[in-house]
Length: 115
Length: 112
Image (cartoon, rainbow over all chains, first blue to last red; front, side, top):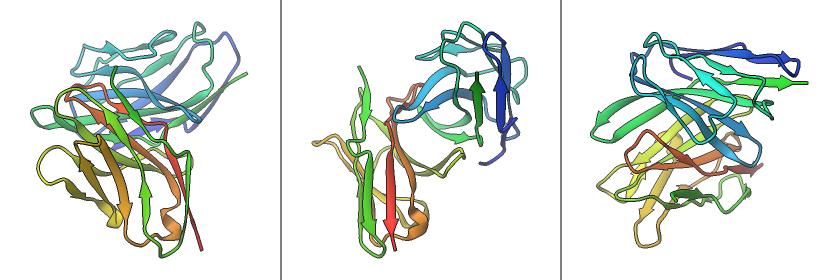
């Protein structure tokens, strides 16, 4: 899982509560990403950040928020507005190798269960 | 819309036999294509990528993939499967932007 840590590994919350998932990388990568994984649906992009203090919505950003105050950190907040928050959340980072070529490295994931 | 398709939910193969996991893509421009493997409750591990150049790409753990532009395919292959290869495999593509498109995944089961 490279130099990306996600904590905690398992997270349980009651419906209506906001929850923040941690993602830290020590790879000195500029870009970071949050994906959601559901069975049979592959990975869907929630948010990504190309540089510090900048981030962009992905395909399923509704009900989520992020911040990128430091290069190493890209926390994801799952708000009470997210209708189906129970899922496996994966954080990734990438380095630019050549123009347009970048490799993503993934963290170990956080499994969030909301009841 | 751009897409990556993995037509098989599961592939079963006997240990020692060759394996193929299929992937087709619809990505604008020159595609950058990737294969990742995921073990239970873990993150994705990079296997190999196609950027440009040779159509046959070699990657980790003896895996290789063949880029076929005319068929818009990027199938993952291995000459001799191991039980330890059993996992979930994802194909992904991008046109060079930060938005990667992932397939839905193919579960590979290698039978002893």
